[in-house]
Amino acid sequence: MKVVAFKRDEQGSGASRRLRKAGMVPAIIYGGTEAPVSVKLDHNALFHALKKETFHSSILDMEIDGQVQQVLLRDFQTHAFKPLVMHADFQRVDATHKIHVKVPLHFINADVSPAVKLSAAVISHVATELDISCLPKDLPEFIEVDLSKMEAGQSLHLADIQLPAGVTPVLHGVGDLTIATAAIPAGKIEDAAAAGDAAAAAAPEEKK
Image 1 (cartoon, rainbow, N blue to C red):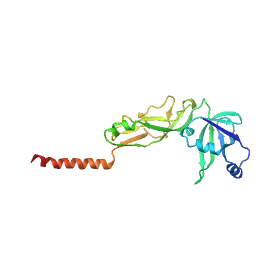
Image 2: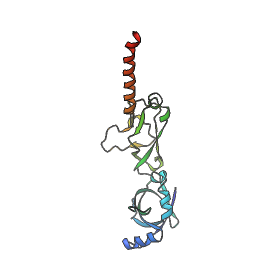
Image 3: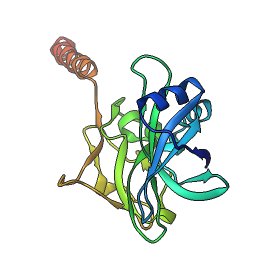
Image 4: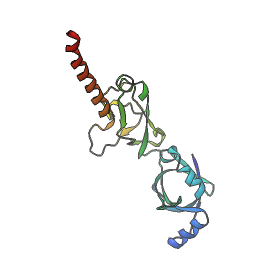
């Protein structure tokens, strides 16, 4: 994904306010062996790009004055109540060094799982993204989580997921992370119990 930015020389809160009034967003690019660079981006282009999932978890080709470098979006700030992007941070990417980034989880095949199909269970997504480490070339836009074999009462853990080649999880001391759970809603359990009690009560009557 390509992003166009322009170098900016003016610094400070006053300069940033003037940029925003002109429809631009102040930003910074840091990392690698080069010094941080202050840039500005078109607000509308950045605002719409931020709505795309891939913009947050992909290597971006940022063009600055005709020169292209690869970066990752690391942070951004928005206005407290207005639809405005106030600032953005980008990190340079080195093809030979691993990066640490969060990627979204995409859940598939819940509707054909035994949990849903046979038990009418509800599958809850305990985690919606995963911290990973990999080389830039191995960075996935998302990680697919197959729920087709989940059964009621079962939990799906990180160890159950096939990660893409070259990708390792960053767990921050956590053990086998829970990704999803399948449980039958309390109301359905109560209905099933009531039906069972009614059947048991009716059995003696039928024997008379």
